[in-house]
Image 1 (tube, rainbow, N blue to C red):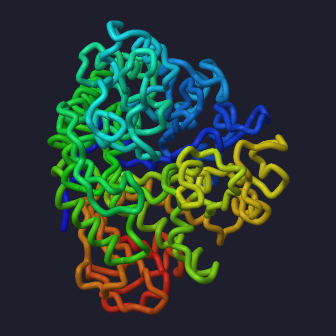
Image 2 (image 1 turned 45 degrees about the horizontal axis):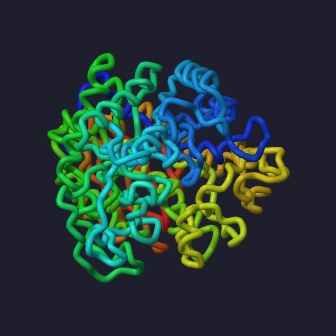
Image 3 (image 1 turned 30 degrees about the horizontal axis):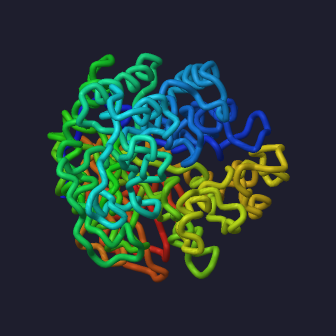
Length: 553
């Protein structure tokens, strides 16, 4: 299986680069108030990429929302799209971050929330002030209906409870797919649509390099407001087939409008969009790429991260995605983020810590060598783990609503572990916004940065080696079907260079027929072999939990 590759152009940075997601509240607290901030990110830019192999080497930062917000959903409830929330600093701090990042050839991608605003946004204040307010139709208002409690229909909030909230002043319901403090906006209104595109233009004018689009597939709802059919599921939201409250075809048109906007800034492909199309239907997700040139530049592929630790599952999901993508489209893979209740090192944990660490290396090799754009989540590179958050310390609205179900996202949002001292090098405050994982005393950046055998060193080696190999940044992908089922093996080829990757997802030795490409293969990065080691074509033994990248030029 192979795919056409792209020539060098303005889009090369997001096609070839490695993205790193920062959850700003948890990355670095410069003013020691217990919450991470923009100046903290500035302080750590050299850790992320200072141009040398002593740094992590990432090429772009995705910042979870930093806009002004009352923080009912920690920034995803925006009250002003063109202001920095004081918890994170000032607009001057952001301008400095953007400038300093660009000096280091690090791009900045902002998290843009197109589905809803805060209930404290001036637009919503106007909208709910009266039925005849000019902005009334900027949000989704409905008269009482025939469903239980006279709600308009049966739609549920993903965060729990009905998705309709009664407004006493104007005697109508407004719709919120998330918490009641996040009213959904009405993209069918042309004035609202233009206002949202104007918010994006504000940041593009400042020089940001792109946007991550939060739940872009939710922005349109059925214009007849039909109730969803029922199905089996673990909670009320999951007991519906969401045919009418999301995934409407009109959303793809807005994605194309957003693409046209970012393409109007500089050379086509210089600015970019990556979409959170949160569903389990690859056919629907791929539609957001358009023909590969007029839709979103990238879309997160959620079935990939939902796989269990299985060579067969990853192989099958990659094959499916490559088959569906337009020829010019770029895959996008990730294993952890701020929304998944468990970091992948926790989800893929083995019975022993040694095997858990080995699985982390296999996962890292896969993520950084597949065809596509990889996204890392802060702390992934040192093996940060979930923390059980006591009920009294839960702040995530999902965790509060569904406690004691293990749905709280707090466990994967704990502060970055920079060093082993009190506060983990994240803060000097006695009250960080979330508890710091006690394992920070042994699991931290300081303990790993000079250790040649650490997970951090392994990530750095992979990322920097990736930069030097066109086969990995621009090459075709061919899955090797003659490998044993418990191995995931593939070739990446570009012009005269070929890379071969073997990933052993089992605890046993496996045999692998490494292809003949006209001579011996040279180890580039491996969990079990020395760099520069030569491997002849033919059947070789792959160690338990081995991850090896070979090169043939």
